[in-house]
Image (tube, rainbow, N blue to C red; front, side):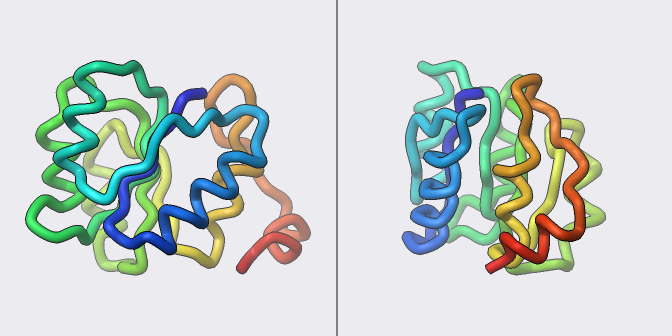
Length: 129
């Protein structure tokens, strides 16, 4: 599954990148600090999944979703719980993770079909940051 990361915070991009590199079902193609640059990339390359931050300067994660035609699957990674209900108004959003307490679930849960598998509470305890 080809994916990209969009987050204005370098540390967050590094964490998601590191976890993606350790999952055989995920191939991280690129990381972006700007949603606008990511849109340009999506116009040229096929992506299956986007890890997307909501709060970014000038162009938010929701701006990105509303702008992209035929949006790929999106997993929101954010430190803000207040947008969870709004997030699921978009068909392309398949999950919403509070960064970065449980985002390891994303990488443990993606199987070869591109769907999230249920994760046991024991794995959650063992992998949470």
